[in-house]
Amino acid sequence: ATVSAPEPRLLTVKPFDRGSIGAIEKAIQAGNLGVNPANDGMMIRIQIPELTEDSRKDLGKQASVIAEEGKIAVRKVRQEANDALKKEQKDGDITEDGFHGDKDEVQKLTDRFCEEIDKIVSAKQAEIMEL
Image (cartoon, rainbow, N blue to C red):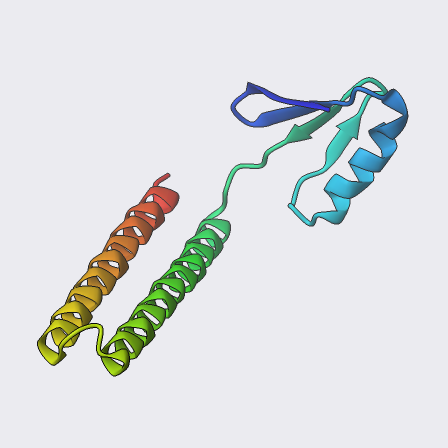
């Protein structure tokens, strides 16, 4: 199907096969997106409702959840890097000083990316709450 946005608050879905229009409409309704598709036999029109303050707050919370998942992923990479450093130290590939220097560098990178995630989500939450 071809999806287009002819107006800021309108999406249109024009399937290549007209026989699948009913299935597409049911899938959109089953998605619990808070929209009601209108089927005219040729295409589906989806009006996007204006965001209320409650829906804006919910979107802000969702952004926070996604940001936390991102920070967890960064911390997981930090743990993997630290494990690799411990293995290298145990195998004698790096010195004690090299181990601690590399471990500090990994922590600095982790902190930098977690701060960047926080900045991005704060800016996005402010954007969402604008009227």
